[in-house]
Image (tube, rainbow, N blue to C red):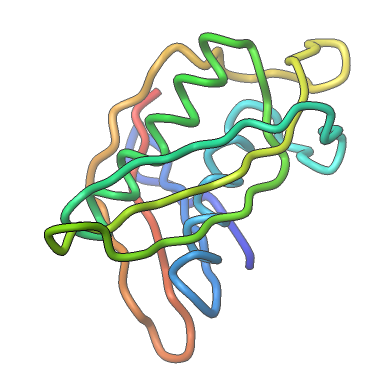
Amino acid sequence: MTYEHFEHGADVGVRGIGETPEEAFEGAACALCALLSEDLSRVRPAVEEEISCTADGLDELLVAFLNEIIFLMGAHRLIFGRFSVSIERADGGARRLRASAWGEPIDPERHEVTVEPKGATFTELEVARRGKNWVAQCVVDV
């Protein structure tokens, strides 16, 4: 699993790349967190949060997942450095995502916070297979 940012006008794109959709989602989540603090390797896994969401398609599921992360970061003042995601079919054909997120309370002295986690708008969603890998990406307006 890897992640990166890409420029998109005044906004920033986040992209996760992995061998499975789950790994791509994990990468996109890390890319989102890296907008707040560029060095996720400094984030200690002191707190574990469980995330669960359901949506009809993978694109919608990505938005629901990233919104949950933004909520946890803003409401509980947490920064996450690692994720574990599983995606399965729910009743009625929808997809259900279950994730664990590991992080710690935001400490501006340690994390060099560049953006406050108050909320975001996600556009230009894409979750698709590209060659051997899966890509989960969107543009974030924070």
